[in-house]
Length: 81
Image (cartoon, rainbow, N blue to C red; front, side, top):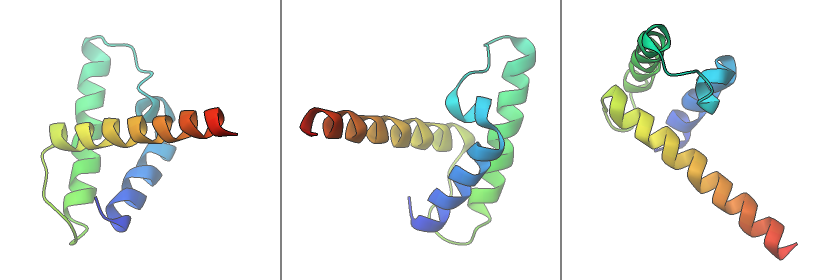
C-alpha cells in the first residue's frame, strides 16, 4: 500500500469510526451497510490512479493487517519504554 492509498483509507475510516474500528454488530442490516462502505472505499482507492486494484475483500484484509501491525508496534514500544 502506498502513501496515497494509506491516506485515503485512513481518512475514510476517520469519517466512519465505528466501521473503521470494527464496532458494528454483525447482523443483516449492518452486513449490508459494511458491504456498501467497503464498496465505497474500494472505488475511492482503485480510482486514485496509483497502486494496485483490489476487490473490497482484499482492501478489508489490507485494513485489518494495517491495524494489526500498528497495534504490534504500539505494544512493543510500551514494553521498551
